[in-house]
Image 1 (cartoon, one colour):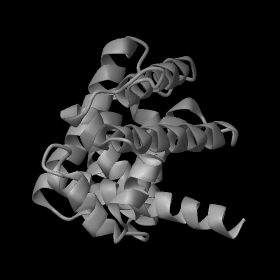
Image 2: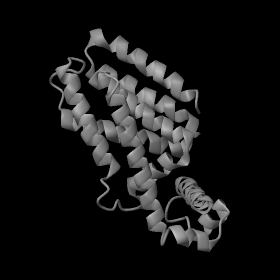
Image 3: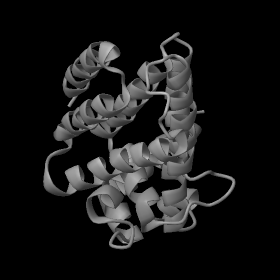
Image 4: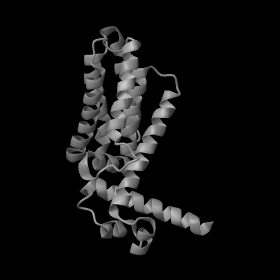
Length: 216
């Protein structure tokens, strides 16, 4: 049992070290030797768990996807409106990125550094489908203008969200990401939400920004 626990801890250490390097330097610029040195493990320990660097990248993408889905399911179970649930999911993903390197590395890998292998679905496709469903629900709940092209808006929203994080990562500290997510929503709410309902959602965004910044 103790040996199994040590093996699990070593595996987790390797994954976190790889994620940190992938996030900071990119997949192509990170070698297995870099990961061994950063994780303070032997090459034998790394190869015991992972046959190749690509396997490590895929595990990071799997962890990010699994964690995001679990978070979205938890939010769905709390009875929020469709638009509130969507806003909360984006701040949840932002919080994950602030708290640790795996979510940040997952974004960088998904944005082009490595191919997403089946049966894992591309996270951006998953996010777009989730956003489409939530926006369609928001239209039915009269929280979004009825003439909105839901599919186009979902794609644009995911692009906006991912783009904000990519640019933010390049030019400012990770602690600024909650502000960028809030900026995105302030602009989006003014474009999508009927005037009588805007104050509620703008207030929610301000609240979630404060809560997410508190963990930065």
